[in-house]
Every structure is written in C-alpha cells, then in structure tokens.
Length: 141
Figure 1 (tube, one colour):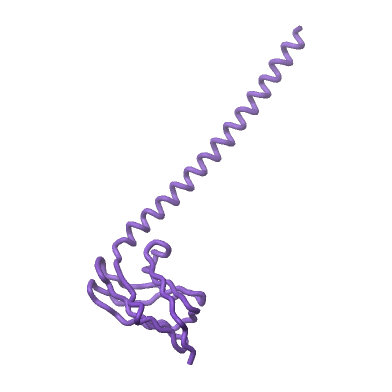
Figure 2 (spheres, helix red, strand yellow; figure 1 turned 120 degrees about the vertical axis):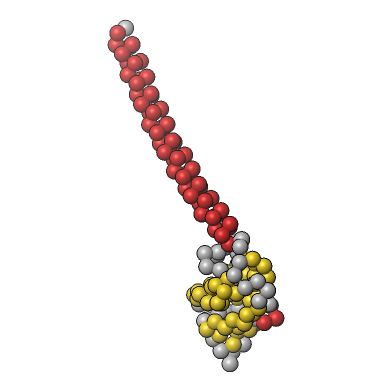
C-alpha cells in the first residue's frame, strides 16, 4: 500500500515536471514571437511615417532606356524636399542625387545602369513603402 502510494506520488511529480517544462517552452516561444512581431511592426511603422513625407511622380512619357542609361523625369508633387532617390533593377541599385527636389519642381534624371524592362524608384529607406514602378521597351543602340 505504501509502495502504490509512493508510485502515485512519483508519477504526479513526473507529470508536474513535464507540465512545467511545457509551460517554460511555450512561454519562451510566445515571448519570442511577441518580441519579433513588435520589432517588425515598429520598423514598418517608423518607415511608413518617415516615407509618407515624400509625394512624387514619374512621368511615364519621359521613361527611356538607351545605350545603358535610364532616363526619366521626376516631380515632387507635394511634401518634403527630396535629396536622393534609389533606382533599383535586375542590374543592381544606384543612389541618385536629385539636389533637394522642391515641391512643384520637375527634374530630368539619367542613371547609367543595366536595366531590363522595369525599374523601381524610391527615396532611401522607403523600399516597399513608398516606391514607383517604371517599365518600358528597351532600345539598344
């Protein structure tokens, strides 16, 4: 009888230890998920707020790719002055100085880079948040 009672207590202690282990593992997993999601949300929110200062457009009629150079016109339609833009395509990405593009100003831009049918233009740090896609028929010289 004493033996059967001690077996029951041993089994209960073992099950309690497994329960505690599961609680610790689950708690750690939930904490990690929470911190990862919070950090991701914070970074996206800050990028969205920062990038919402820029309102610009690219004239689709001005887009041309010729002899390894991409040409287009960019206009600051509203918002903060734009100092630099990033142009990205299959051939890589280049940062272009647009010299403090003020509201209402249109500026022709030429970027020597390898481009195949499309490119993405955005202010630095605003990739995926505030970007413009441009596509065209490439002309080879």
